[in-house]
Length: 211
Length: 211
DNA sequence: AATTGTGAACCTCTTCACAGCT
DNA sequence: AGCTGTGAAGAGGTTCACAATT
Image (cartoon, rainbow over all chains, first blue to last red; front, side, top):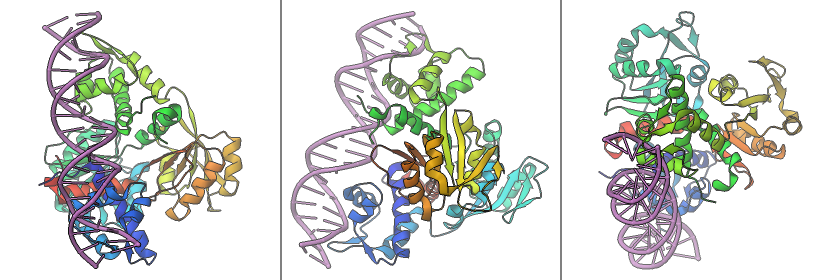
C-alpha cells in the first residue's frame, strides 16, 4: 500500500473545499489548472495528488465537479459522520463546540468534558458539559472515535491517556506540548502559536523565506 | 541568503517551547538527542536546523539552555513585542483575544474590529471592539504589523485587502479560503478543519499513513 | 485544441557518518 | 568518552514533458 504524504492529504482538503465552492457557484467541470490556481500549487501537483487514488478526470475535458467532490469525500472519510469528544471547555473549547467547519463536515461534538465543577451541567450550543471524572466510561458508551484536547498543558497528557483508554483512535491536540500515544492512535497537532511565530520569523528574516 | 524551509521554522518553534519548559524545570544544558526525543525528530535534524543560523553548542557538552533559548528567540523575532489587529470577534476571535500562547510570546492584540453594531464598543479581556469602518486608519495609527483574520469566508478577502492598505505586513488567516495578498505581505493559514480532516483520512486509510 | 495521467528528471529535505572539539 | 557541526548519501516530494484521450 503506497504511503500518502501529509502535504498531499492537506492539499486534498483544500481541493475539496474549492470543489464545494465551485459547485455552489454552479460550475459543472473544472480543470487541474483552475484547481491549482485556486490553491497556489501547480496543475501537475493537482494531477499527481489525485493520481494516488485513481483516474478521476477525462482527457481534454477536465474533472466533473460533483464526481470528484464525491470521490475526495470518500477517500478522506468525509462521506460519513464522526463522533467527537471535546475535552476542556475554555476559550478554545467553547469556540470549537460551535465551529461550523467541524459540523458541516460531519464532525459531531457529542460529548464535552471539563474539570471545573462550575461548568459541569451547563449547556453550550446544545452540548452538556460533563464531569471529567467519568470520561473513559462516557467516551466508550458514546462510541466516540475522535478526541479534541483543549485543556491546559499540565493536564493534556493525562487527558490523552484517558481518551485512549476510552477507545478513541484519533486525537486533535490544541495543547502546545508533544503528547505521547500508543502506536495505533493518530495525533494531529493544532498549535496556533506556531503559525504566528512563523509569521514573526518571516517578518524578521524576509530574505530567508520566499514571499 | 540561504532559504529556510517551513519545516525548519516550525521545528524551531517547537524546540523553543521545549527549551522554555526545560529551563523552568531547572536544567542548565541539553543535548541534541534530548531535544530531538522531546519533539519526535532525529538528533541530526535538530543539529541541522540549528546549523542554519550558527553554531550554538559545545562539542562534548551540548547546548546551554538559556543561551540557545535566547538565540532562537532572536532568530525568530520573539525577543520583542508585535502589535496585532484582530478582525472578527466571533467564537474564534474571542478565544484568540485571551489566548495565553499569543500574549506570553509578545503578540499583543492592541485593536479588535467587528462589523456587528451590537459588539462595537464592548470590551473583551481589556480590548475595545472597534467599528470596522475605520479599520485602515486605526491599523495605521496604531502601527499594527500583524493582522489576524477570523471573519466569515465571505468577507475575508476584503478585510485582508483593508489590513494591507493599513500597512500590515503579516496575516494570520483563520478563514477557510485562499486569500490573495501583494508579494511583500506574508500569510500563514490556520485552518482547523484541515487537521481534523487529516485525522479522518488517517482513520479511514490507516495503511496509507505512518503511525 | 484541450486536458489528463504518468515516467523521468529534478530538487529539496532528512539521515548518515565521521572529523573535530571539550 | 561524549557530543556537535557538516559534507555526502539517501529518501521523498515536485515539476517537466509528452503520450493518450476526448
